[in-house]
Image (tube, rainbow, N blue to C red):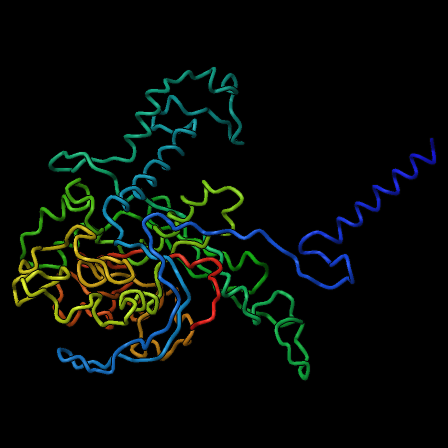
Length: 477
């Protein structure tokens, strides 16, 4: 019996060893050659509402001096990797979902707070040490509460009334979205390594073990008056937490942009209804500044990842396109300066290819007075709508006169998170595409403009992109 058990055990052991050396990705069973470790490939499905812009190259910019302003647009041959891009601009309906999510999250927090409500009778009496005074150790029994009243109180707390007309409206000052971003790029730089031995690989020099490395990080808080304070802290590098930046952004768009952008114009109806009325649901959101657009991208990412489980770690984040990505996508597969294939801006029948200002003082010649519904004009060869006109679009790139000349020629971009105390000129962000109020020269794919990152305009919106995961390699024929 013992011999039989020993023989069975020997066979099982041999089978286990054989399986270890014959599995895919392991060593070869015949000769011990290295074959690599295999992994499970993941075919990334097309994100909802996005199209794939395949990797490629172009001569960014134009060598033709602009005839209207006489500006030279810097040129350079560049290459970009593949990415997904929203086929249409972010609409009022999409952005309102973000605003309502922030509103509802505030309500949920207040419903979970037993002391919240503004009614003093619901508050737990405490002694000078902050401990509950008996018999209120169990407030739920000592102070019975009406859940319906709590819910109504929490909901009403995010609304206010116009002091003159009495109109009920969202208290927009409360709609603050807090998020954190780990700065992988800065953390990867050798000069910021936590171990001093890794900061300089040149063995001719001795690393200073006592060197103090200063690091800047963004942080934010809301004071007792509900005012958001953003600070850029510079301090000695101490841990990986120094690369985590915190932002708090009020997410409600500046609906007054319709008044402030156009003095002495009857635009009150747009100010009051453009963002909130269902008739404008599919119109591009405006009045959203660069900081709010980034907050939307972060929220959209988190909103997606919560439903993906373990696969979430492989999904690239939503973000604003770089200036190079935007121009590459707008030019289409043939690299045109305008998204369409035809010459001119209208067909032989006088139908315009985009929503812009065709003539001096005549905004309606193309069929629209202000913005239009997204996607009513034909898409370019990449399947993207409104890459010329309708609204100009934020990019992630800092605006400089040198443009692409100051960037790499591979996936070029230039980023700078301007601190509050920085000169205002450092807060310019590149805006592309021209808008409904711009003439033909400004809606060309090569035209560069800018807006300040904290300003929302009635003619500036945005769309999101996501880097494609694992682009396929192939030999070009």
